[in-house]
Amino acid sequence: MSLLKINHLHKSFEGVKAVNDISITLEKGKILAILGESGSGKTTLLHLIAALYEPDSGTLTLDNERIIPPSEKLIAGHPDIKLVRQDYGLFPNMSIRANIAYELRYYEENYRNERVDKLLEISGLAHIQHHVPRQVSGGEQQRATIVKAIAEEPKLLLLDEPFSHLDAVNKRRLKNEVLDLIKAEEVSCIFVTHDVADAYGMADELLIMQKGNALQLGSPEEIYRNPINQYVAEITGEVSWSSELGVLSSELKRYTLNSELRTFLRPLQIRISEKSDIKATVLSVKFLGAYYEIGVQVQDTQLKMYSFDKLSVGDNIGIEIKSSS
Image (tube, rainbow, N blue to C red):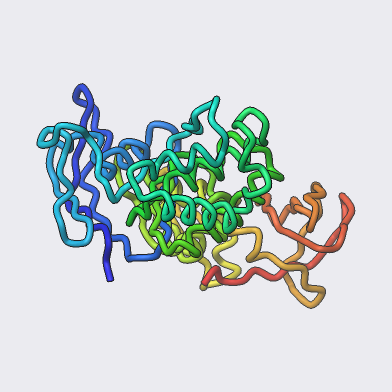
């Protein structure tokens, strides 16, 4: 069942199109990631959904009811949509518990206390509930901000670059914690990011934006395997382009780049195979933790592949190239 529907949405600033004719639907309980470079319009789209910006044209509905734009309201926003911006938005001199409870200040005291207790428990923040924000980590602050946003049980949670302030360790941890929290509360979510790694493992759907346009919408796996163009391919992961290797496999996808037909290859499509007739020379070896990134030369083309086994520069190997689908 659909929760949010966006139809032919437009928004320009001083003649520059920030959002250009975007139409998407978000199902209840799903998580959508919006990916794009800086200036792609993703944050503007988030503010339009939150009813904080006035659309030039187009319609937005939540649960089949029109989202009223700022021009028609005394106070901009929507009671069932909560936006968490990049700055944490916590009151600095109030405890984590008090910050969350503040969102429920108009509710009956027993309900408020029970609700805050539940949120602190499922978010893993109970042990720091009496600390003020400056006494906890960045990841805990971000988690508290998200908990505060969902305290009133909104239908839709919007997150603007939720992981941008965090180091790699805290980012991985927070992704899992936020995913668990969203699922536990059964809230739908849209978040924007410029790093596709934030979307993988978290988002049910992925929207790629460029210069205000929606280029491709689908599951992260589908877009990774079948990008519609060079921009989508390169923003969603490592890719190699070749004008020669298409003759090696008729199943490889081809795209036109600068008026030339090029073969599209992800590192995962290339595997070591002793029996293969395709020969490659190892040019580089990078240790990336769980695996190695191997640079190889095949004919006049340089490719990247992954391997669990360490190779050495100069090794001659056979490789197998598989279809992306």
